[in-house]
Length: 200
Image (tube, rainbow, N blue to C red; front, side):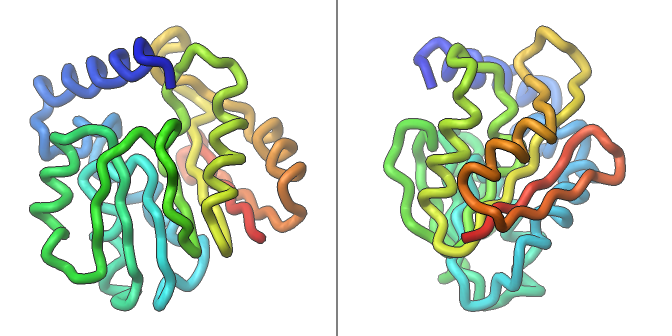
């Protein structure tokens, strides 16, 4: 991600922190906490996470882990985010669990750890300078998983020229077919996003 793109993303979250508070789901870009929970339920369908390692790219407050830890007590979770404010909250909420680790970094430029599963829930929808960036990032994330990659992506946004960019589910599906034939795609209940699972 270009420095100007990083600055734009940070300004977006700073404004939302000012409006909603740093511990809110809205600060992360969610419309509300229920929307976050719904999309976490969808992406959690990627597989049986017990005794598996998982990298949560753009983890925010780490609440995906909070949403699945009771069902998968043996999940080994790593959260990655570039925002210090969000990571501090994630560490406060979940950092005492021996199965968690939180890393600071821009997933677009940093070296990603290899994990069984990689998920990215909403982190690919920021508008950036490079038009094919999303495809490059899907390829990079897939290279970091041993079993499967789960993506939740917006296909409709409130403001067409805003920081969030929608994507065609069919185009994303066609690109993922260049990586593997093992693909499962699900539309969300509210129809403004889709979840796609890409397996080895």
